[in-house]
Length: 408
Ligand SMILES: [Zn+2]
Image (cartoon, rainbow, N blue to C red; front, side, top):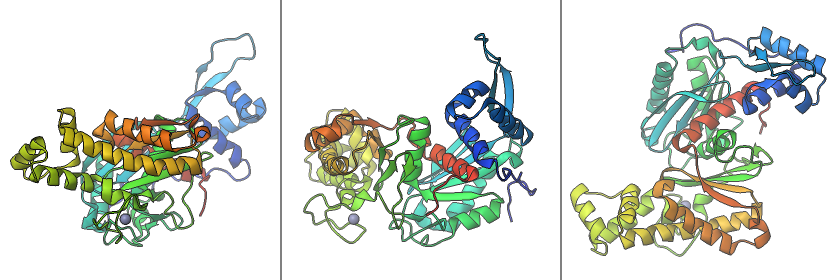
């Protein structure tokens, strides 16, 4: 059996009774960075002497370290406190075609990151085995007992309470497979499992373009299409863990069968596979000479090829991207009217199709939503790219540690 180092991990449990305040202090430092004790006291609305006691307790637990004094402002001198450098979290982002693992510090800044091609359809055993190998590699140079917890995202619906995927359409063999319990047993650490789009939304909210935004949607356009919903600062998962599964909203009449068994779904009309399929048809028929050349040379076309062809001036590829942006914009306008978010972040592999796609999505969404719902809305591209997932997964692990996770 592989464990992180064969030794027992550092067990951290906050003392009973006063633990709520200690958690607030830790969450504040995680989200805002090092702060003066006086600032903490003010912002948490707790007396200075109480904060001093909390900080002393956190220092004793080696969760917090004291820094130097703050510049004098004439009042009582205060000291900066920050999270201990011995705190680490691990974020794992299992995608349909990729596997990414990141090691972060207590502020969830990525210290080390590795990403490789992977196929989730191979089933849980080989993917989890590879995940453990990458974790072992990433934690080689640190004291492994300083890893507090692991967050994991998987590309399908998840029972958050049970830590397992539930009937995930593109993950054969994973249904009800105990991802959380097996990883936790193997590595001897607490593990929290969620849907990949949810962790990406959390990542962008903690460290990316949606920093501090309380009501937002994160739309991932990759092999599949999904949406993470953050409402009043918390993930909305729904009763069965499948809230935000927008890929199967019907967008038009079509004969193409979606893997869900229906036709005309957003995902089967504009996911990565759909775009590649349309491009291949346009290349084969000679409708696009550009795509025809690439197809002849490579034998197949991907969504990235469509992006490159569009940038190179191929009008057919540009139209394919526009068409996809319109379908997505149509769905998003419905969501905007329904949910009234402050921000929509667009991420995932296909978001690399660039400005053209975002512009089309924006145009349709703003045109079709009510003026009040869009008066403060912004639609932006993901800032963290491939790291959004691991940062969000690490965030989830830190929430589990702080014990503030909403229990379904
Ligand atoms: Zn479908």
